Image (cartoon, rainbow, N blue to C red; front, side, top):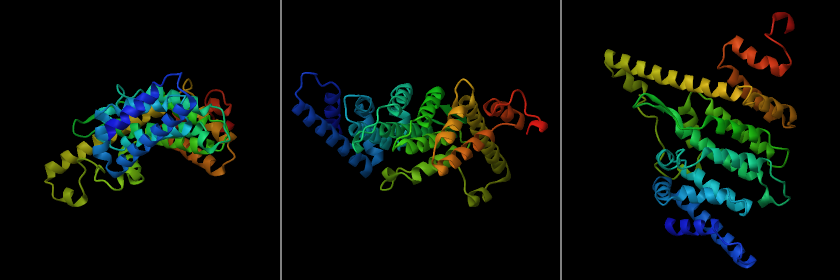
Amino acid sequence: MLSGNRTMLSSSSSSSSSSSAREDGKEDQDVEHSLKMILGLLTRDVASSSMELGRRHGVSALMEVATNSREGVRVRVLALHALSAACSHGPFVRQYACPRSLSQENLAHLVSESCGGAVSASVDERPQQISVAAIALFLRLVVHLDHTDEKMMQAVQDVNGPSVCRAIIAGLSAPATEDSTTCHRASIDLLSAWTASDMDAIASAAEASDVYLESTNSRTSTPNRLSEAQMSDLKPREFAEYKKKMYEIHKHNTDRAKENTILFCDEETGGLTALLDCAVSTKDHALRREIGSAIGRLMACFEDDEAKKLVSPLLGYSGHITSSSK
């Protein structure tokens, strides 16, 4: 079944310009039908279906459809939804959606391109829907490719930081449309995940809200974490080793979160400016509060002097903030 759908998707991406309008319309319907079938298979069993999709080079086929500007918005969004559903399964992401297989630069470009696209009155032809779906896919990649390997005790950072920043900033800078608020919130979710020190909490929250995992046994429990009862059964030396290991994991995650925050808040990157501009321009008061909370979490990674140095230029101060200028 997946093999036939993959063939249909590939043939769509290489259709000749001499095809008639009727043939193009039928082909679009066939591609949409194939994408819905793939989504159905992933909903039934995301673990086995996603790995089968990866073995049959489904990642490249789905990305070809998603980035093909000749396809309709609805078809491109379905392709991104299918890929995002497959990326709910961690082993699929690490084996088939790693940077060498799924270009994060191209994904960030897709977000930027669709955010600035022309606005259509049709519900099915609003380009910002593509950016929301692409940002959701980026969130899946961050959850599974930017973490600490607890067995090897080393950071796994297969996420391209500049591409994540570009996608977030593009989403925050989306012009006001019917979908812009959704796009802004998706960008804030991606930022929160990428700069979080507790990636386990982010992964658990993503899985808990994921419809594609509800009917499967693919939920991943936190590896090597012991319950209170299990810890009480440890011998003193084993308990000390376990606590040391948990401290090192926490330190790795905290250092990673600070590195990502520094990159996003860097003046050349412009992430902090994009957040403030979005807060000023939006008419959604709830969104404005969410942005304020997001900025607060970012600033919590820094010492007071570091935070003041970052914020001062944006607030119109020159040099350090003194007590008399507050």
